[in-house]
Amino acid sequence: MEVQSYFSTGELDRASDFKAPQRLIALGSLLLAGGTLALLALRPPRRLRRALERAGARPVLGAVAAGAGVSLLLVVVDLPLAAVSHERAVRVGLATQEWPAWFWDLARSAGIGAALAGVGAAVLLALIRRFPRNWWLPGSAAVVAFAVLFTWVGPVVLDPVFNDFEELPEGRLRTEVLELAERADVEGGEVYSIDA
Image (cartoon, rainbow, N blue to C red; front, side, top):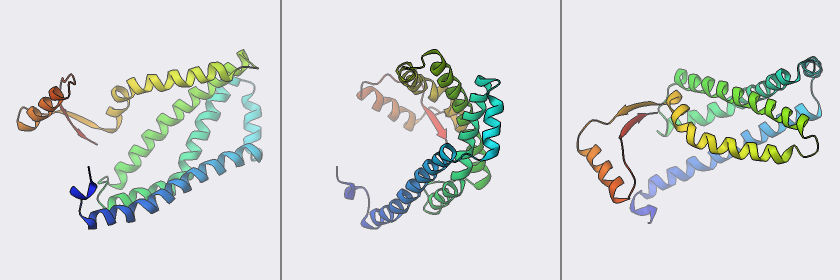
């Protein structure tokens, strides 16, 4: 399929104009996160070193706090670039979310990310203590298992946190979607409208 059969030259030019700066913003976010992590690892602030030393008294809780803290720090560091990216998406009509709703989604996402990072850090510490030389083997298996779990559980547990699902009422659109699923040999159940 040729994209020109669906989009005008003007629309394709607008997409190209939007895409290049978005890629730079994404690259900037990646570099900012990497730089922040490198700085924390190579030159941790004195307060952070003291906090980590105190956390050594309760290593598992310390790992949870460290993982969650690093996750939240990365969200805060990336906030200006994320806001610019959102503003650009709103300006071209790719996003419609107002700032309060955007910040609310960001806060929920940061909380979920911090919880997952805290659990991940605790699991990593437990694996390092249990398998000091080969911790990376069970660690790799844990990462794969976690990814598989979230592939299946994510749409059921996480998607409702950020989206509103409503059953599509009887009508032409619902019928067309179910017919399309049947033609594609996809088992169809309910059809939902999602307000992201």
